[in-house]
Image (cartoon, rainbow, N blue to C red; front, side):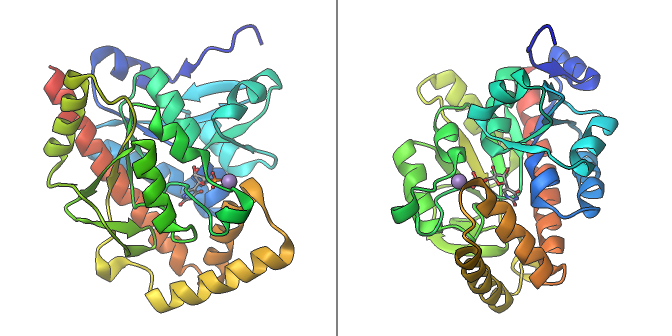
Length: 307
Ligand code: PSU
Ligand code: MN
């Protein structure tokens, strides 16, 4: 390989050049977060949801060391189906490129790469955060510290309920990451509509979220991330009792099997998908598709501001 610059997919390059709306998408949910074979189908559905709302999808990932913004279908298929795809956070990007790896980007890496490519809006399912037992393990996702310094709007359903949500909310405040609820003042808990924590702010429309982005740019004061927390409607969430049982069993398995570090999140998500016999998968897919739609509508509103 002769250079390591970010490669833009053709459609994404054209949209960015013309100032048309683009939404970044991560690939870790595809390779590590969702079970095969549904993962590839869902990855395509997410892109379609972005298109249906009028924006261009830019799924980000690494193929044989090439860092790509706007994977084509063959590249997406490869990351969804081959074994040995690495989970890449920001610190891994250059090492993985230099060693020619296949890799999927986390929220942290996707945010950083998207911002570097000039994309301002990103859709995902749930952020990483502070893990339970973090007081002993120090396991806190690099998603948080990266969002503290990356100018991007991330549409998500809060953080995964497998985490210590309260500690994560506190860390977001300390790190100076802006958080707004989308039509809610309660912080969502991914599978669950409400994680039990209040939010100071909400926005009521994609246009108002776009106004936040405009205000940040014009003020020039805050250069960190903006979380747009988009909860599932109550009647679409995972049954809370099933959720709590599944989580308790998953945490026990984690301790029994000695799973630590970056394997924790994929392990717990896989446990949820098998233990709930697909119910959590269906919820997970609904979350991502809703977030892709909202992110696209925010990107459309933001692009209209710039013209
Ligand atoms: N949320 C999901 N599925 C996922 C993830 C988040 O619903 O697969 C991934 C994201 O890529 C996120 C990562 O950035 O998990 C966090 O992992 P860790 O806790 O190791 O930082
Ligand atoms: Mn971790």
